[in-house]
Image (cartoon, rainbow, N blue to C red):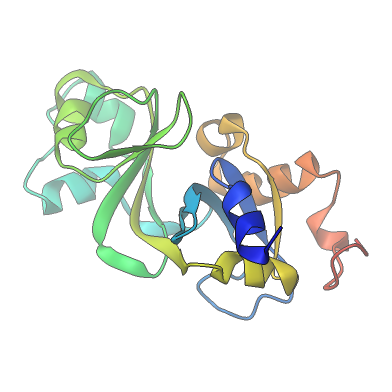
Length: 196
């Protein structure tokens, strides 16, 4: 089996990427990234533990869709917006469950989607759906073979994603919780994989 065939058969979609302590790229240092798509062309994900200094109420105003006073405003207004990665930082992405049906949604798993179309924001404002959301500005992208090379260089640890970490924990608890899925304490993690 060639190296390319190996990469194509292993998808990290619906997995967490945990930045190793030696990660020097400031965009990814101490991050937890949720991989939404991974195939022969590359990978796409969103960082889920780096809130920006902006909440959803402010974001909705900036896109000329102010939250309507009421239950949905209360539900979403104070949620943080996250730095999703260094690509297209002027564009919003909504990680959500359930998947639903929106104009531009990438189905990550049977119950999690990543949507980049405005209709999801309108639905959040109108009827409070989808139930669970994490909104980012920007995303993280990798060219073909890049994520595999970075893994071989011990830049990341990977583990199957737990939606409860994404949607049920405060941002500062997500990275430690993902590490616990591996049975590792981030504070004790060595810079060399296999020596945690």
